[in-house]
Image (tube, rainbow, N blue to C red; front, side):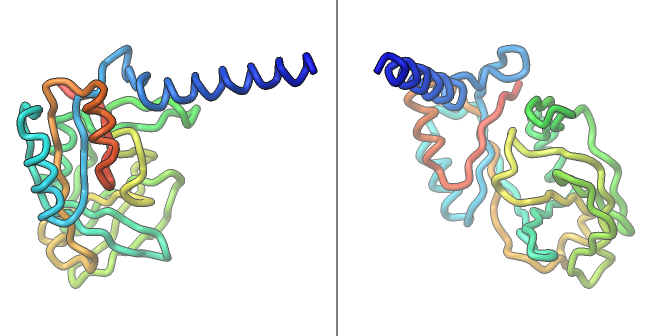
Length: 201
C-alpha cells in the first residue's frame, strides 16, 4: 500500500512539473519570457485573431505562405522577404544536438532563382517542389518556427519568382508581438488553431 502511495505521489509530481514546463516555464533562452506568437490560417481567421488581441498587441504583421505536399510530407513554403520577417523577430530556432534545446539563428541561408533552402528534422536530399519555375531546395539543417514544427513537416524558403508558381494551398501567416503574454492571455493564444509562441525583442 505504501509503495502504491509513493508511486502515485511521484506520478502526481511528474504531471504537475510537466504541466508547469509546458504552460509556464517556456522561460526560453536564459529566462526570456515568451511575448510573441506565429499563427497560420485563412486570411479571415488570422484577421479575426488580430482583432481579438488588438488591445494586447504591440505590433502585428501578416504575409502569404503556401502549404505544399511532397512525398506525403507537408512543406511550408515562403519567399525570402517573409522568412526575413520571422528572422527579425527571432522566430527561426535551431534545434541543437540534444534535440531538446533550441536557439534563435542569426541569419538565413541565401536563396536564388535556381535553389532555395530547406529546414527539416533530418537531412533530405534532392527535394523538388512542384513549380513551373525551378523548385529545387537544399537542406540547411534542423530549424523550426517559434519553437515547434506544428505548421508542417518541413520549411522551405525560395526566391519570390519561384514562390508564385509553387503548387500548394495558400495561407496567411501572422506574427503577433504582445506587450506581455502571461496567464490568462497565454491560454487564449494557445487555443488559436496553429499558433506557436516564442520570445521576441
